[in-house]
Image 1 (spheres, rainbow, N blue to C red):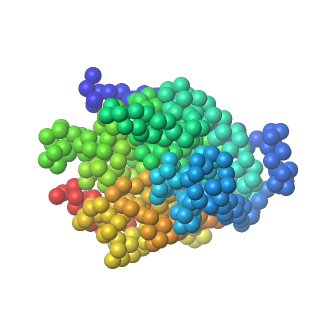
Image 2 (cartoon, rainbow, N blue to C red):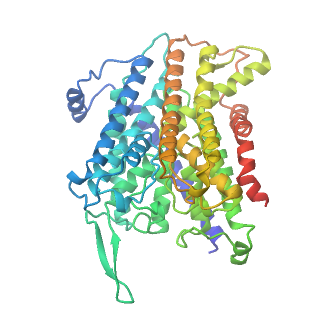
Image 3 (cartoon, rainbow, N blue to C red):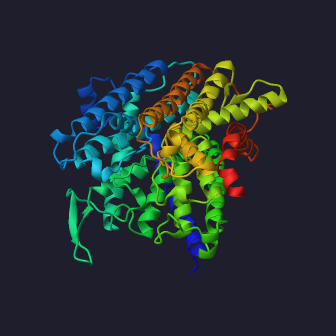
Length: 553
Protein backbone atom coordinates (compact mmCIF):
# COMPACT_ATOMS: atom_id res chain seq x y z
CA UNK A 1 0.00 0.00 0.00
CA UNK A 2 1.36 3.44 -0.94
CA UNK A 3 1.97 6.04 1.74
CA UNK A 4 -0.81 8.19 0.27
CA UNK A 5 -3.34 5.35 0.42
CA UNK A 6 -2.24 4.50 3.96
CA UNK A 7 -2.59 8.14 4.95
CA UNK A 8 -6.07 8.40 3.47
CA UNK A 9 -7.05 5.21 5.29
CA UNK A 10 -5.78 6.71 8.55
CA UNK A 11 -7.81 9.89 7.97
CA UNK A 12 -10.88 7.80 7.17
CA UNK A 13 -10.50 5.70 10.32
CA UNK A 14 -10.03 8.86 12.37
CA UNK A 15 -13.23 10.38 11.03
CA UNK A 16 -15.13 7.13 11.69
CA UNK A 17 -13.83 7.00 15.27
CA UNK A 18 -14.80 10.63 15.91
CA UNK A 19 -18.24 10.05 14.38
CA UNK A 20 -18.74 7.00 16.59
CA UNK A 21 -18.17 8.90 19.84
CA UNK A 22 -19.63 12.24 18.72
CA UNK A 23 -23.17 11.65 19.92
CA UNK A 24 -22.58 9.68 23.17
CA UNK A 25 -19.73 11.90 24.37
CA UNK A 26 -21.48 15.12 23.36
CA UNK A 27 -24.67 14.06 25.15
CA UNK A 28 -22.68 12.96 28.21
CA UNK A 29 -20.94 16.34 28.43
CA UNK A 30 -24.34 18.04 28.31
CA UNK A 31 -25.57 15.89 31.21
CA UNK A 32 -22.39 16.55 33.21
CA UNK A 33 -22.92 20.30 33.20
CA UNK A 34 -26.69 20.33 33.63
CA UNK A 35 -27.22 17.63 36.26
CA UNK A 36 -28.19 18.66 39.78
CA UNK A 37 -26.71 15.64 41.57
CA UNK A 38 -23.24 15.93 43.11
CA UNK A 39 -20.99 12.90 43.44
CA UNK A 40 -19.63 11.98 46.86
CA UNK A 41 -16.05 12.88 45.98
CA UNK A 42 -17.28 16.19 44.59
CA UNK A 43 -19.07 17.02 47.85
CA UNK A 44 -15.84 16.32 49.74
CA UNK A 45 -13.99 18.75 47.46
CA UNK A 46 -16.64 21.44 47.95
CA UNK A 47 -16.43 21.08 51.73
CA UNK A 48 -12.63 21.28 51.69
CA UNK A 49 -12.58 24.47 49.59
CA UNK A 50 -15.69 25.81 51.37
CA UNK A 51 -17.88 26.23 48.30
CA UNK A 52 -21.66 26.02 48.15
CA UNK A 53 -22.20 23.95 44.99
CA UNK A 54 -25.86 24.95 44.73
CA UNK A 55 -25.13 28.70 44.62
CA UNK A 56 -24.80 30.22 41.16
CA UNK A 57 -22.60 33.14 40.14
CA UNK A 58 -22.75 36.25 38.00
CA UNK A 59 -20.20 36.64 35.22
CA UNK A 60 -18.04 38.86 37.45
CA UNK A 61 -17.95 36.28 40.24
CA UNK A 62 -17.34 33.49 37.75
CA UNK A 63 -14.47 35.49 36.21
CA UNK A 64 -13.02 36.22 39.66
CA UNK A 65 -13.01 32.49 40.32
CA UNK A 66 -11.16 31.80 37.05
CA UNK A 67 -8.55 34.50 37.70
CA UNK A 68 -8.09 33.69 41.39
CA UNK A 69 -7.74 29.98 40.80
CA UNK A 70 -5.30 30.53 37.94
CA UNK A 71 -3.19 32.95 39.99
CA UNK A 72 -2.91 30.50 42.87
CA UNK A 73 -2.06 27.75 40.37
CA UNK A 74 0.78 29.83 38.88
CA UNK A 75 2.23 30.53 42.34
CA UNK A 76 2.03 26.90 43.48
CA UNK A 77 3.51 25.54 40.27
CA UNK A 78 6.32 28.08 40.45
CA UNK A 79 7.10 27.05 44.04
CA UNK A 80 7.06 23.34 43.20
CA UNK A 81 9.69 23.92 40.54
CA UNK A 82 11.85 26.10 42.77
CA UNK A 83 11.65 23.55 45.63
CA UNK A 84 12.48 20.56 43.44
CA UNK A 85 15.65 19.61 45.43
CA UNK A 86 13.45 18.94 48.48
CA UNK A 87 11.04 16.67 46.60
CA UNK A 88 11.33 12.92 45.97
CA UNK A 89 12.18 11.60 42.51
CA UNK A 90 14.17 14.77 41.78
CA UNK A 91 17.27 12.77 40.75
CA UNK A 92 19.54 15.64 41.76
CA UNK A 93 18.31 17.90 38.97
CA UNK A 94 18.21 20.98 41.18
CA UNK A 95 15.86 23.93 41.41
CA UNK A 96 14.47 25.30 38.17
CA UNK A 97 15.94 28.72 37.32
CA UNK A 98 13.52 31.55 38.34
CA UNK A 99 12.82 32.93 34.87
CA UNK A 100 12.26 29.47 33.46
CA UNK A 101 10.07 28.48 36.42
CA UNK A 102 7.89 31.57 35.90
CA UNK A 103 7.56 30.97 32.18
CA UNK A 104 6.77 27.31 32.73
CA UNK A 105 4.19 27.99 35.46
CA UNK A 106 2.38 30.50 33.27
CA UNK A 107 2.64 28.13 30.32
CA UNK A 108 0.99 25.15 31.97
CA UNK A 109 -1.68 27.14 33.83
CA UNK A 110 -2.74 28.85 30.58
CA UNK A 111 -2.99 25.48 28.77
CA UNK A 112 -0.07 26.54 26.54
CA UNK A 113 2.59 24.07 27.72
CA UNK A 114 5.38 25.95 25.98
CA UNK A 115 8.71 24.44 27.11
CA UNK A 116 12.04 26.25 26.89
CA UNK A 117 14.06 23.44 28.49
CA UNK A 118 14.92 19.74 28.12
CA UNK A 119 12.34 18.03 30.38
CA UNK A 120 14.32 14.85 31.09
CA UNK A 121 17.29 16.96 32.25
CA UNK A 122 15.48 19.70 34.19
CA UNK A 123 12.31 18.22 35.70
CA UNK A 124 12.09 15.35 38.18
CA UNK A 125 9.13 12.99 38.20
CA UNK A 126 7.44 14.66 41.18
CA UNK A 127 7.35 18.06 39.45
CA UNK A 128 6.15 16.39 36.26
CA UNK A 129 3.38 14.40 37.95
CA UNK A 130 2.18 16.67 40.77
CA UNK A 131 2.91 19.97 39.08
CA UNK A 132 2.68 19.83 35.32
CA UNK A 133 0.29 16.89 34.92
CA UNK A 134 -2.16 18.32 37.48
CA UNK A 135 -2.28 21.55 35.50
CA UNK A 136 -2.91 19.55 32.33
CA UNK A 137 -6.19 18.51 33.92
CA UNK A 138 -7.11 21.79 35.59
CA UNK A 139 -6.29 24.20 32.76
CA UNK A 140 -8.37 22.12 30.35
CA UNK A 141 -11.24 22.04 32.85
CA UNK A 142 -11.11 25.85 33.14
CA UNK A 143 -11.52 26.23 29.38
CA UNK A 144 -14.35 23.72 29.39
CA UNK A 145 -16.15 25.63 32.15
CA UNK A 146 -15.86 28.98 30.35
CA UNK A 147 -17.34 27.45 27.18
CA UNK A 148 -20.29 26.03 29.11
CA UNK A 149 -20.83 29.40 30.83
CA UNK A 150 -21.09 31.09 27.41
CA UNK A 151 -23.59 28.50 26.21
CA UNK A 152 -25.66 29.17 29.34
CA UNK A 153 -25.70 32.82 28.32
CA UNK A 154 -27.54 31.84 25.14
CA UNK A 155 -29.89 29.45 26.92
CA UNK A 156 -30.95 31.58 29.89
CA UNK A 157 -33.15 34.69 29.96
CA UNK A 158 -33.43 37.65 32.29
CA UNK A 159 -30.84 36.45 34.79
CA UNK A 160 -27.29 37.32 35.71
CA UNK A 161 -26.44 33.77 36.79
CA UNK A 162 -24.05 31.67 34.67
CA UNK A 163 -23.52 28.64 36.89
CA UNK A 164 -20.79 27.99 39.43
CA UNK A 165 -17.14 28.03 38.35
CA UNK A 166 -16.04 25.64 41.09
CA UNK A 167 -18.72 23.12 40.17
CA UNK A 168 -17.85 23.33 36.48
CA UNK A 169 -14.14 22.97 37.25
CA UNK A 170 -14.71 19.98 39.51
CA UNK A 171 -17.12 18.18 37.21
CA UNK A 172 -14.97 18.75 34.15
CA UNK A 173 -12.00 17.24 35.97
CA UNK A 174 -13.67 14.42 37.93
CA UNK A 175 -16.34 13.29 35.46
CA UNK A 176 -14.68 13.97 32.09
CA UNK A 177 -10.93 14.36 32.02
CA UNK A 178 -9.81 11.98 34.79
CA UNK A 179 -11.74 8.88 33.68
CA UNK A 180 -10.96 9.37 30.00
CA UNK A 181 -7.27 10.01 30.66
CA UNK A 182 -7.09 6.93 32.92
CA UNK A 183 -8.56 4.67 30.25
CA UNK A 184 -6.38 5.99 27.45
CA UNK A 185 -3.24 5.88 29.59
CA UNK A 186 -3.82 2.12 29.89
CA UNK A 187 -4.44 1.92 26.13
CA UNK A 188 -1.16 3.71 25.45
CA UNK A 189 0.74 1.45 27.86
CA UNK A 190 -0.72 -1.58 26.06
CA UNK A 191 0.49 -0.11 22.76
CA UNK A 192 4.05 0.33 24.03
CA UNK A 193 4.26 3.80 25.60
CA UNK A 194 6.66 3.83 28.56
CA UNK A 195 5.40 4.21 32.14
CA UNK A 196 8.27 4.12 34.65
CA UNK A 197 9.39 5.90 37.82
CA UNK A 198 13.05 5.20 37.10
CA UNK A 199 15.22 8.11 36.00
CA UNK A 200 16.77 6.09 33.22
CA UNK A 201 18.49 2.92 32.12
CA UNK A 202 22.08 2.33 31.09
CA UNK A 203 22.75 0.58 27.78
CA UNK A 204 25.96 -0.63 26.18
CA UNK A 205 26.58 0.67 22.68
CA UNK A 206 28.07 -1.37 19.85
CA UNK A 207 31.48 0.22 20.46
CA UNK A 208 31.45 -0.82 24.13
CA UNK A 209 30.67 2.63 25.54
CA UNK A 210 27.80 3.13 27.99
CA UNK A 211 24.93 5.55 27.45
CA UNK A 212 21.99 6.44 29.64
CA UNK A 213 18.47 6.58 28.21
CA UNK A 214 15.97 8.65 30.20
CA UNK A 215 12.75 7.04 31.43
CA UNK A 216 9.60 8.65 32.82
CA UNK A 217 5.90 8.04 33.53
CA UNK A 218 5.17 8.95 29.93
CA UNK A 219 1.85 7.18 29.27
CA UNK A 220 -0.08 8.96 32.03
CA UNK A 221 1.35 12.29 30.90
CA UNK A 222 0.72 11.57 27.22
CA UNK A 223 -2.95 10.71 27.68
CA UNK A 224 -3.94 13.98 29.38
CA UNK A 225 -1.49 16.07 27.39
CA UNK A 226 -3.40 15.16 24.21
CA UNK A 227 -6.89 14.80 25.68
CA UNK A 228 -6.71 18.21 27.39
CA UNK A 229 -5.12 19.82 24.30
CA UNK A 230 -2.12 20.72 26.43
CA UNK A 231 0.97 19.55 24.57
CA UNK A 232 3.90 19.59 26.99
CA UNK A 233 6.13 16.59 26.46
CA UNK A 234 7.78 14.63 29.26
CA UNK A 235 10.71 14.15 26.85
CA UNK A 236 12.33 16.89 24.78
CA UNK A 237 11.39 15.25 21.49
CA UNK A 238 7.73 15.31 22.58
CA UNK A 239 5.47 12.97 20.62
CA UNK A 240 8.28 12.24 18.17
CA UNK A 241 10.02 10.33 20.98
CA UNK A 242 9.56 6.55 20.65
CA UNK A 243 8.82 6.29 24.39
CA UNK A 244 5.90 8.72 24.02
CA UNK A 245 4.68 7.69 20.58
CA UNK A 246 6.24 4.42 19.44
CA UNK A 247 4.08 3.37 16.48
CA UNK A 248 1.46 4.31 13.94
CA UNK A 249 -1.28 3.04 16.26
CA UNK A 250 -0.21 5.24 19.17
CA UNK A 251 0.03 8.12 16.71
CA UNK A 252 -3.57 7.45 15.66
CA UNK A 253 -4.79 7.29 19.27
CA UNK A 254 -3.04 10.54 20.16
CA UNK A 255 -4.51 12.41 17.18
CA UNK A 256 -7.94 11.06 18.17
CA UNK A 257 -7.45 12.37 21.71
CA UNK A 258 -6.52 15.81 20.37
CA UNK A 259 -9.81 16.13 18.52
CA UNK A 260 -12.38 14.16 20.46
CA UNK A 261 -13.53 16.68 23.10
CA UNK A 262 -13.40 19.85 20.92
CA UNK A 263 -15.39 18.06 18.19
CA UNK A 264 -17.91 16.51 20.59
CA UNK A 265 -18.54 19.87 22.26
CA UNK A 266 -20.43 21.00 19.15
CA UNK A 267 -22.93 18.21 19.89
CA UNK A 268 -23.07 19.41 23.51
CA UNK A 269 -23.81 22.91 22.27
CA UNK A 270 -26.65 21.69 20.08
CA UNK A 271 -28.16 19.70 22.93
CA UNK A 272 -27.97 22.58 25.41
CA UNK A 273 -29.57 25.12 23.06
CA UNK A 274 -32.23 22.49 22.14
CA UNK A 275 -31.32 22.64 18.46
CA UNK A 276 -28.83 20.03 17.36
CA UNK A 277 -28.57 21.63 13.94
CA UNK A 278 -26.74 24.55 15.53
CA UNK A 279 -23.99 22.17 16.64
CA UNK A 280 -23.74 20.65 13.17
CA UNK A 281 -23.34 24.12 11.67
CA UNK A 282 -20.35 24.90 13.88
CA UNK A 283 -18.90 21.43 13.33
CA UNK A 284 -19.07 21.86 9.55
CA UNK A 285 -17.04 25.07 9.75
CA UNK A 286 -14.43 23.43 11.98
CA UNK A 287 -14.26 20.41 9.65
CA UNK A 288 -13.85 22.47 6.48
CA UNK A 289 -11.01 24.56 7.92
CA UNK A 290 -9.30 21.51 9.50
CA UNK A 291 -9.58 19.53 6.27
CA UNK A 292 -8.38 22.40 4.10
CA UNK A 293 -5.28 22.97 6.21
CA UNK A 294 -4.57 19.23 6.29
CA UNK A 295 -4.63 19.19 2.49
CA UNK A 296 -2.29 22.19 2.29
CA UNK A 297 0.26 20.82 4.78
CA UNK A 298 0.16 17.28 3.38
CA UNK A 299 0.52 18.44 -0.23
CA UNK A 300 3.33 20.87 0.63
CA UNK A 301 5.39 18.21 2.38
CA UNK A 302 4.75 15.58 -0.30
CA UNK A 303 5.61 18.03 -3.11
CA UNK A 304 8.61 20.00 -1.83
CA UNK A 305 10.47 22.66 -3.77
CA UNK A 306 13.98 22.23 -2.31
CA UNK A 307 16.62 20.37 -4.36
CA UNK A 308 17.44 17.82 -1.64
CA UNK A 309 13.78 17.12 -0.92
CA UNK A 310 13.04 16.83 -4.65
CA UNK A 311 15.73 14.17 -4.98
CA UNK A 312 14.28 12.32 -1.98
CA UNK A 313 10.76 12.52 -3.41
CA UNK A 314 9.30 14.20 -0.30
CA UNK A 315 10.34 16.47 2.54
CA UNK A 316 11.23 13.88 5.20
CA UNK A 317 13.63 16.16 7.09
CA UNK A 318 12.57 16.38 10.74
CA UNK A 319 9.99 13.59 10.41
CA UNK A 320 9.90 10.08 11.81
CA UNK A 321 9.97 7.28 9.25
CA UNK A 322 7.42 5.32 11.29
CA UNK A 323 4.85 8.10 10.68
CA UNK A 324 5.86 9.31 7.22
CA UNK A 325 4.44 12.38 5.51
CA UNK A 326 0.72 11.53 6.04
CA UNK A 327 1.02 10.74 9.76
CA UNK A 328 3.20 13.79 10.36
CA UNK A 329 0.93 16.16 8.41
CA UNK A 330 -2.20 14.84 10.12
CA UNK A 331 -0.62 15.32 13.55
CA UNK A 332 0.74 18.78 12.66
CA UNK A 333 -2.65 19.95 11.38
CA UNK A 334 -4.51 18.59 14.39
CA UNK A 335 -2.09 19.88 17.02
CA UNK A 336 -1.92 23.44 15.64
CA UNK A 337 -5.67 23.41 15.00
CA UNK A 338 -6.46 22.41 18.58
CA UNK A 339 -4.05 24.72 20.43
CA UNK A 340 -2.25 21.65 21.73
CA UNK A 341 1.41 22.12 20.90
CA UNK A 342 2.43 18.47 20.95
CA UNK A 343 4.48 17.53 17.88
CA UNK A 344 5.50 14.26 16.27
CA UNK A 345 7.75 16.03 13.75
CA UNK A 346 9.84 19.20 13.74
CA UNK A 347 7.75 21.98 12.22
CA UNK A 348 10.88 24.07 11.70
CA UNK A 349 11.93 21.58 9.00
CA UNK A 350 8.65 21.86 7.08
CA UNK A 351 8.60 23.55 3.69
CA UNK A 352 7.67 27.20 3.47
CA UNK A 353 4.07 26.36 2.54
CA UNK A 354 3.74 23.50 5.03
CA UNK A 355 5.21 25.51 7.89
CA UNK A 356 3.06 28.46 6.89
CA UNK A 357 0.03 26.18 7.09
CA UNK A 358 0.80 25.28 10.70
CA UNK A 359 1.19 28.97 11.56
CA UNK A 360 -2.06 29.93 9.81
CA UNK A 361 -3.88 27.16 11.66
CA UNK A 362 -3.01 28.91 14.92
CA UNK A 363 -3.79 32.35 13.52
CA UNK A 364 -7.36 31.29 12.78
CA UNK A 365 -7.82 31.74 16.53
CA UNK A 366 -8.29 28.32 18.13
CA UNK A 367 -11.37 27.12 16.29
CA UNK A 368 -10.22 24.42 13.86
CA UNK A 369 -11.56 22.81 16.05
CA UNK A 370 -9.70 24.59 18.88
CA UNK A 371 -8.75 23.48 22.37
CA UNK A 372 -10.93 21.94 25.06
CA UNK A 373 -13.54 24.64 25.64
CA UNK A 374 -11.53 27.36 23.91
CA UNK A 375 -12.51 26.11 20.47
CA UNK A 376 -16.20 26.27 21.34
CA UNK A 377 -16.22 29.75 22.83
CA UNK A 378 -13.89 31.08 20.12
CA UNK A 379 -16.09 29.93 17.25
CA UNK A 380 -19.22 31.21 19.03
CA UNK A 381 -17.59 34.63 19.34
CA UNK A 382 -16.75 34.54 15.64
CA UNK A 383 -20.35 33.50 14.89
CA UNK A 384 -21.53 36.67 16.65
CA UNK A 385 -19.19 38.76 14.49
CA UNK A 386 -20.49 36.98 11.38
CA UNK A 387 -24.11 37.69 12.35
CA UNK A 388 -23.23 41.31 13.07
CA UNK A 389 -21.74 41.69 9.60
CA UNK A 390 -24.82 40.05 8.10
CA UNK A 391 -27.02 42.49 10.01
CA UNK A 392 -25.06 45.42 8.61
CA UNK A 393 -25.60 44.14 5.08
CA UNK A 394 -29.38 43.84 5.41
CA UNK A 395 -29.86 46.88 7.63
CA UNK A 396 -31.40 45.28 10.73
CA UNK A 397 -30.35 44.54 14.29
CA UNK A 398 -28.49 41.23 14.22
CA UNK A 399 -29.49 38.35 16.44
CA UNK A 400 -28.15 34.87 17.14
CA UNK A 401 -30.05 32.05 18.84
CA UNK A 402 -32.80 34.43 19.89
CA UNK A 403 -30.47 37.02 21.46
CA UNK A 404 -30.05 40.54 20.10
CA UNK A 405 -26.47 41.50 19.31
CA UNK A 406 -26.10 45.10 20.42
CA UNK A 407 -23.13 47.32 21.19
CA UNK A 408 -22.09 45.44 24.33
CA UNK A 409 -22.20 42.02 22.71
CA UNK A 410 -20.30 43.10 19.60
CA UNK A 411 -17.71 45.04 21.63
CA UNK A 412 -16.92 42.12 23.91
CA UNK A 413 -16.73 39.80 20.89
CA UNK A 414 -14.35 42.17 19.14
CA UNK A 415 -12.13 42.35 22.23
CA UNK A 416 -12.04 38.55 22.41
CA UNK A 417 -10.98 38.34 18.76
CA UNK A 418 -8.47 41.21 18.73
CA UNK A 419 -6.61 40.35 21.95
CA UNK A 420 -4.55 37.60 20.36
CA UNK A 421 -3.37 39.43 17.21
CA UNK A 422 -2.62 42.57 19.21
CA UNK A 423 -0.24 40.94 21.67
CA UNK A 424 1.18 38.63 18.99
CA UNK A 425 2.09 41.27 16.43
CA UNK A 426 3.35 43.79 18.97
CA UNK A 427 5.58 41.28 20.74
CA UNK A 428 6.90 39.70 17.53
CA UNK A 429 7.60 43.13 16.05
CA UNK A 430 9.54 44.22 19.12
CA UNK A 431 11.44 40.92 19.26
CA UNK A 432 12.60 41.09 15.66
CA UNK A 433 13.87 44.66 16.19
CA UNK A 434 16.02 43.78 19.20
CA UNK A 435 19.70 43.62 18.37
CA UNK A 436 20.23 40.32 20.18
CA UNK A 437 17.44 38.40 18.45
CA UNK A 438 19.51 37.11 15.47
CA UNK A 439 21.76 35.30 17.92
CA UNK A 440 18.78 33.28 19.13
CA UNK A 441 17.74 32.15 15.65
CA UNK A 442 19.12 29.16 13.75
CA UNK A 443 18.22 30.86 10.47
CA UNK A 444 18.34 34.37 9.09
CA UNK A 445 16.13 36.00 6.48
CA UNK A 446 12.52 35.04 5.96
CA UNK A 447 12.76 31.74 7.84
CA UNK A 448 14.21 33.53 10.86
CA UNK A 449 11.17 35.80 10.87
CA UNK A 450 8.95 32.71 10.56
CA UNK A 451 10.60 31.28 13.68
CA UNK A 452 9.82 34.45 15.64
CA UNK A 453 6.29 34.71 14.25
CA UNK A 454 5.59 31.07 15.07
CA UNK A 455 6.85 31.47 18.65
CA UNK A 456 4.58 34.40 19.45
CA UNK A 457 1.64 32.91 17.54
CA UNK A 458 2.07 29.76 19.62
CA UNK A 459 2.28 31.66 22.91
CA UNK A 460 -0.55 34.11 22.19
CA UNK A 461 -2.86 31.29 21.04
CA UNK A 462 -1.88 29.09 24.02
CA UNK A 463 -0.60 26.45 21.61
CA UNK A 464 2.90 25.60 22.83
CA UNK A 465 4.59 24.14 19.75
CA UNK A 466 7.56 25.87 18.17
CA UNK A 467 9.89 26.15 15.23
CA UNK A 468 12.78 24.49 17.04
CA UNK A 469 15.38 26.75 15.41
CA UNK A 470 14.64 29.55 17.88
CA UNK A 471 16.24 29.60 21.35
CA UNK A 472 14.02 31.32 23.91
CA UNK A 473 16.00 31.09 27.14
CA UNK A 474 16.93 34.79 27.29
CA UNK A 475 15.16 37.04 29.84
CA UNK A 476 13.35 38.88 27.03
CA UNK A 477 11.88 35.77 25.44
CA UNK A 478 11.02 34.13 28.78
CA UNK A 479 9.18 37.21 30.03
CA UNK A 480 7.58 38.38 26.76
CA UNK A 481 6.31 34.93 25.84
CA UNK A 482 4.95 34.53 29.37
CA UNK A 483 3.07 37.83 29.08
CA UNK A 484 1.68 36.78 25.68
CA UNK A 485 0.43 33.53 27.21
CA UNK A 486 -1.32 35.36 30.04
CA UNK A 487 -2.94 38.01 27.85
CA UNK A 488 -3.78 35.53 25.10
CA UNK A 489 -5.57 33.33 27.62
CA UNK A 490 -7.30 35.62 30.08
CA UNK A 491 -8.31 38.69 28.06
CA UNK A 492 -10.50 36.55 25.75
CA UNK A 493 -11.86 34.62 28.75
CA UNK A 494 -12.88 37.84 30.51
CA UNK A 495 -14.48 39.16 27.32
CA UNK A 496 -16.33 35.88 26.76
CA UNK A 497 -17.69 35.80 30.31
CA UNK A 498 -18.81 39.42 30.03
CA UNK A 499 -20.52 38.48 26.75
CA UNK A 500 -22.19 35.51 28.46
CA UNK A 501 -23.50 37.74 31.24
CA UNK A 502 -24.90 40.22 28.74
CA UNK A 503 -26.65 37.48 26.76
CA UNK A 504 -28.11 35.85 29.88
CA UNK A 505 -29.73 39.13 30.96
CA UNK A 506 -31.63 39.42 27.69
CA UNK A 507 -35.07 38.10 26.96
CA UNK A 508 -35.20 35.71 24.05
CA UNK A 509 -36.80 37.12 20.92
CA UNK A 510 -38.84 34.88 18.61
CA UNK A 511 -37.70 34.13 15.10
CA UNK A 512 -39.34 36.12 12.31
CA UNK A 513 -39.24 36.05 8.53
CA UNK A 514 -36.27 38.42 8.69
CA UNK A 515 -34.20 36.18 10.98
CA UNK A 516 -31.16 34.72 9.25
CA UNK A 517 -31.32 30.91 9.55
CA UNK A 518 -28.25 29.42 11.22
CA UNK A 519 -28.73 25.72 10.47
CA UNK A 520 -28.59 25.64 6.68
CA UNK A 521 -25.71 26.07 4.25
CA UNK A 522 -25.63 29.87 4.19
CA UNK A 523 -24.60 30.50 7.78
CA UNK A 524 -21.68 28.01 7.91
CA UNK A 525 -20.42 29.45 4.61
CA UNK A 526 -20.68 32.98 5.98
CA UNK A 527 -18.96 31.97 9.23
CA UNK A 528 -16.13 30.26 7.34
CA UNK A 529 -15.70 33.37 5.21
CA UNK A 530 -15.59 35.55 8.32
CA UNK A 531 -12.86 33.41 9.89
CA UNK A 532 -10.80 33.60 6.69
CA UNK A 533 -11.43 37.32 6.26
CA UNK A 534 -10.40 38.22 9.80
CA UNK A 535 -7.25 36.10 9.60
CA UNK A 536 -6.34 37.47 6.15
CA UNK A 537 -6.82 41.12 7.03
CA UNK A 538 -4.88 40.71 10.25
CA UNK A 539 -1.99 38.44 9.36
CA UNK A 540 -1.32 38.42 5.60
CA UNK A 541 1.40 41.14 5.87
CA UNK A 542 3.22 39.16 8.58
CA UNK A 543 2.84 35.89 6.67
CA UNK A 544 4.03 37.54 3.45
CA UNK A 545 7.32 38.46 5.11
CA UNK A 546 7.93 34.88 6.23
CA UNK A 547 6.30 31.64 5.07
CA UNK A 548 4.72 33.05 1.91
CA UNK A 549 8.02 34.56 0.75
CA UNK A 550 9.79 31.31 1.63
CA UNK A 551 7.26 29.23 -0.29
CA UNK A 552 7.65 31.40 -3.38
CA UNK A 553 11.46 31.45 -3.23
